[in-house]
Length: 265
Image (cartoon, rainbow, N blue to C red; front, side, top):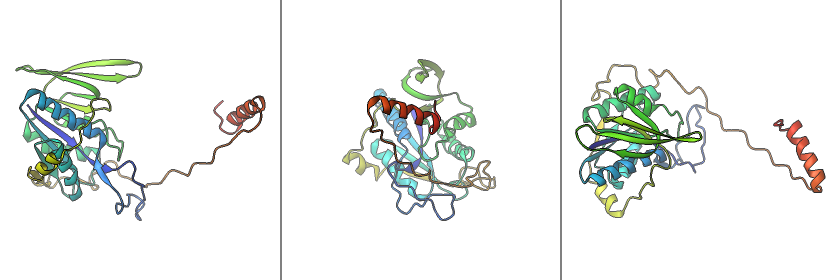
C-alpha cells in the first residue's frame, strides 16, 4: 500500500510571536519551527498501517521555503520512506486553494491508495487544505478522524470514527481516500537515533511550479483569493478581581460584577 502524507512546517506553539515590520507576517528570526502536531498524527497512522501490513511505502509531501526540508527530515526519521518538497517562491505564499492545488499536483502522480494529513495547521487554523486536496484529486474524504481501520483485498475500504457533538460517527469509504487526522488517533513516536541517521540518506525530491505543471498560472500571493491584510497581537489581559469580603457579601459582589461589568448574566 502506498500512503501519501501532506505535512506543514509551523511555528512551535511555545514560540513568542513577534509581528514583522510589514505588519502582515511574523518575524521569523527567533522562531522555532516544527512539524504541525496534527500532521504528526497523520504520519504516525501511515507508519502504523505500513507496519501492520509488513509492506508498503510512506511518502511525505510539503509546500514551503527551504527550511521546510527540516520538517520532511523529521518525518523521514520517524520512518517515512521519502519526501517531496514543493519549493517555489511563486507558490509558498499561496492561500489554501493554491497550497491544495500544489499538493494535488505533487501527490497525483504517486497514485497513492490513501492520503493522510492533519485536520488543520496550528499556524493558520484554516481547516481547508485537506478537504480541498480531496476535491482536487476527485477523491472521497473523511475529516477529523480519531480511529481508522483499513481493509484489504481488491475492493479495499476504510472505516473511520469521528467524534461529533454528543456522539460517535462511523464512516465507511472506498480507497483511495483522503483522511484528516484529529488528536486521539494515535500517539506519535519519537524519532530514534537510528531513524535520524537513516533519514539523512533518504531521498527528498524538490519540485517547482514548472515541474508540477503549474508554471504560468496565477499562484502564490498574486493569485490568492484570500490575502492577509494585517496581523495584530491580542490585547493584554486585564488583572483579575479578588473578592475578600465574607461569603454572602462576596457572592453579591460577584453577581453585580458579572451583570454590570462582564455582562454575562
